[in-house]
Image (cartoon, rainbow, N blue to C red):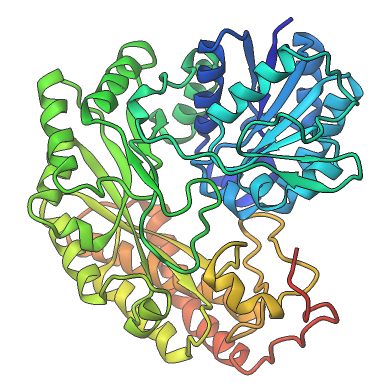
Length: 501
């Protein structure tokens, strides 16, 4: 038996696109919370949904560990948790029900829980942790330990710590005052890495990709103001670990887990001026060098020695939120970057031997076919090393959501990350954007392969054949895209005059 069983509801199997990509990572946010709770004196265990089959395995974990308290603590460093994919929300509800059937006190924390506590309380959760959760969770566990409360009685609203939502006696959602975020990240214990089934992760990674990657973070939050970006956990607040703390953890992982690669999951790595340089210096000092992937902003990359320091630190690929090749759209998003900076940062990264990848976003209000073409031309000009494509997704708490909420119907979430449905009345219909995804990839993949061949690089018969296929089928795909431009966007649903859930 343990005091607390941790779980999370992101099942990779429930997301077909990412299941095909097969790049699983342990739930880092959950592991931070488990470490903090363990260090406060509670025994803990972990159910990791990432590679699990279904919530039935959660039920088996409940039966095995027989916890008094079950905690669904979503990985807030996984951007998909913010999207509140319907399959994952449904899984969470099933997991709550299973824990309650076994007499557990049920606590939940995460982006969707913070945005919609009423949904999770109605599903049976005893309390919802709002925002950053480690300290709030410890306070809740102390209250439970010191009270005669048992599952089924409800938590009530008396003597609740800051950062909690519960139901009162009338069945109404009540919230305590917000809890300040943690400023000193070095004060937190290292994630509870010992709870992870490392042999399973290693096997999956090496069988699929030929190497093994682990995940870390150097920061929490983001101070920038992109008006479509949801920040239910940290808001506009931002905190950073010391370079030494990060490298100490990398050394521990190298010595105990032996990863071949690290993904830094920060919203933006290296916001503070010279942090990347300090990081590279510390890596040299400790003799720790593991290739890594990170997310950065093009304007910050162009400061001083940042790109050179990233290369020295071992950056293999840097993903940037390029979003659009149209300055008009970047300005409408309040992105704060320039298209010219995308071009220059890409050039400099490649000059330093670092790959670069673009996140692209289509369908923002006001985007025209000409704006779409500007983005396509930017990709053709720069040929990044990888691309990720999405359409604008209205998330609660964002200015973008407030702008389009009257256009939201009964459906306000994607089923999975491959959905690409327009959830509001966008510039074009959903069919246009789903086909645009196909067109962009056909054009990009074939040009990328051709560029490699021109450099004398052997790409393999499969890639060469794929290139020929994409070039031959691209004209037909472009004609279909042209036809889809005239497909009318669907009328607003009867509930569209009411803000979506």
